Image (cartoon, rainbow, N blue to C red):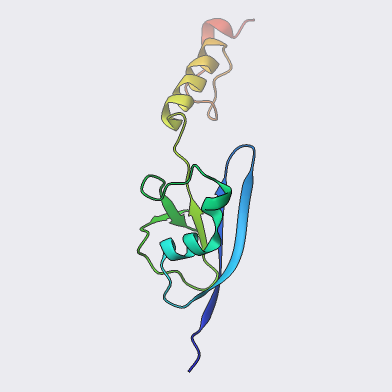
Length: 115
């Protein structure tokens, strides 16, 4: 009896370089096995599976999780800035400039509306 092969992808991205590697793996392969078999760690030396988070289709998972047909295994980089802080600073700046709205956050400064 032959083992069933699954088609999966491994994705990793930096601002300057991205990779999406398609490969076939044996049914029952784990996320870690797929990443190792893809060879992506040879292309991106900063990938360290003991530190980088991983996911399948934008949902966090464990290295021991099994992959399924059509899965895209993603290796995530560490955040360089806290998204909440960035949004908060953008909303404060919009308020100061009198251009705050539902998208930027907060309410416009009524004293600045006459500019």
